[in-house]
Length: 379
Image (cartoon, rainbow, N blue to C red; front, side):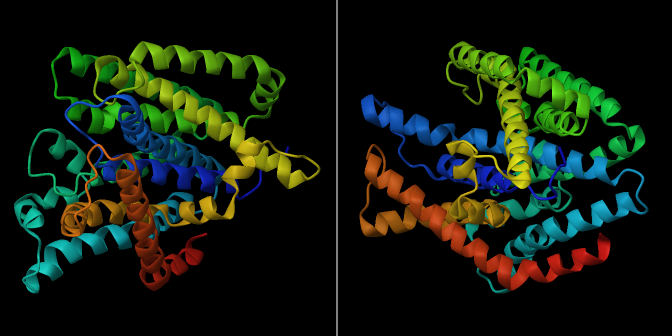
């Protein structure tokens, strides 16, 4: 089966991931004690933290695939790094320039960012995931830790893939990296490290990226694809049993517990990698025509979710500062109570999603697109 150059369902998965992350970061439903429907609603919103894990697996899948397809091409490594920089740096560094350069010049920098100013160097060099986890600085841009993890991945992973060259050797490396990440989390927990260290340090989160990469290699080895296709039912049943058992074992995948943050992270990465593989496979079948895909795949290809996926990077960068700076003040001014109020809290999350989408749309079309147009020179 020929692999299509564009996988639309993965754009939908990207859109779903950002909506989950915003639901987690913007939810204001919490009460000291919650019961019944409020507790269920809080769980649904808060479980959105797994959206970051989904982003990591998706990055591993896409980037590993791009790199494997580029092996042997002239200037393949240089082109990859340049194209990634054109996609990521303008908005990321534009945000830092706005917060730490322009707003201070205008005497309009919010207090939360004034406190961050002495520690801003870690943001500029993409190392905030290491320092934030150790309590260095006030963590005024807390969501940037995951961007630091991904940037470190973009710098190191290409060197490994281009050195190994073969999908089979890359697959072995992916499994080794995934195992090392799991062992690092277990070791740090046993050493009584803070749960943020386990959550944010790159060495602890590489299994998600590596397992996404493993799925990409499986999709590029014909004999492996044939074996997976021939055992699809058995593999699906095994994965469902693994997910159900892990959900019960970890007590619903809490982010900071021993079970949730050790084997829980890895199980989620396996589930997401399998989902990405299945989605990419469905995209390939649709490309060849004559195949009616299941409802879940059609939902991922819905124009609304596709559009959210297109602007997901901007939404991720923008949503947390918007929420931190304005949500509490505006809600208080309007007299809206969200703690313990399911409808109000849900409407607030929806509002943050919509405003973040609008801001990301403007950022993309008025600012980022000028840099993205340069990518055609580095094909």
